[in-house]
Length: 284
Image 1 (cartoon, rainbow, N blue to C red):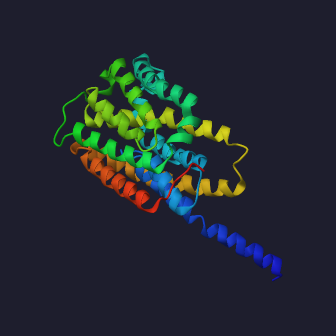
Image 2: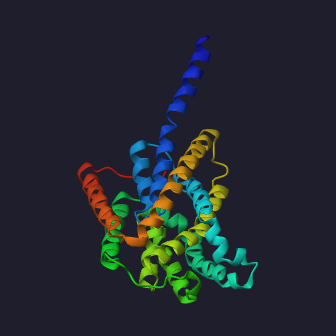
Image 3: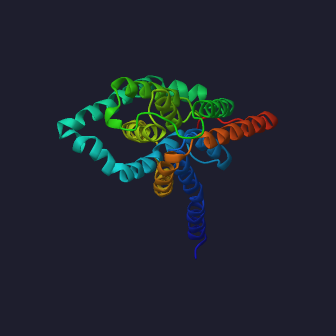
C-alpha cells in the first residue's frame, strides 16, 4: 500500500475510533434530558473532559431525544390534543401548550448568545445543580402528592406558570424538565401530570431550539462534525426511549428527591474539583 494511502487509511480509522465520544455524549443526553438533573450541564462537563463537541453539537443531538419523545408520547399527544386540534375539544390543550412555550422562546431568542457567553461556566453550572437539587428536596416531599391529575382540566394560569418556570432552564445547570416539573407541582398539578406536561412542552421548545441552532450553524457544520452528530442522535434516541418509559413509571409512586440528592452531590464534587485544579470550561 502506498505511503500516502496508508496515512489516509490510518486517519479514517482514527476518525471512526473517535466516534465513541459523540456516542457517549448521545447516551448521556438521552439519560439526562427528561429527568431533573440538567442535560446541558452534564454535556458541558463531559464535553470538557472528552475534548469533544460544541454548543451546536450539544443542542443538535437533543433532536434524537426529541424524536424519541415524539415516538413514545404520540398516542397520548393525539388523545389530549383532540387529534391535533381537528376536534374542537382538543384545541384548548394545544393553546395551553402554546401559551407555556412563548415565554422561554421569546427570552431565549433575545438572550441566547449572552447566556452562552457569560453563564456557561463550571462554577455556575455546578451552583445551579446544587441549588436545583435543594429546591427539589424542599418542594417534592416523599409519599403520595395530591394535585390535579387530569391535564385537560389544567387552567391557562397553570400552563403559563409552568412556561415561566421553563425560562429558568435557559441557565445551564438548572434543567428544563426539573424547572417545569417543580413549577407544575407548585402550580397545583400532581407529580405525574407535571411530568407529562413537561414532556409535551419539551416538544415545541426543543424542536424550535434545535432547528434554530441548525439554521444559525449551517455554515459551520462540517462533514466530520455531521458524522459525529448522526452518531450522537442515534445513541440519544435509543437511550431516551428507555429513560422516558422508565421515568413515567417512576414518578407514579416516587418523589423526585433522589434526583435532588444526586444534583447536590454532583454539583459539590464539581465545585471542589474546579476549585482545586483551577480548570475552566468555556463555550466552544
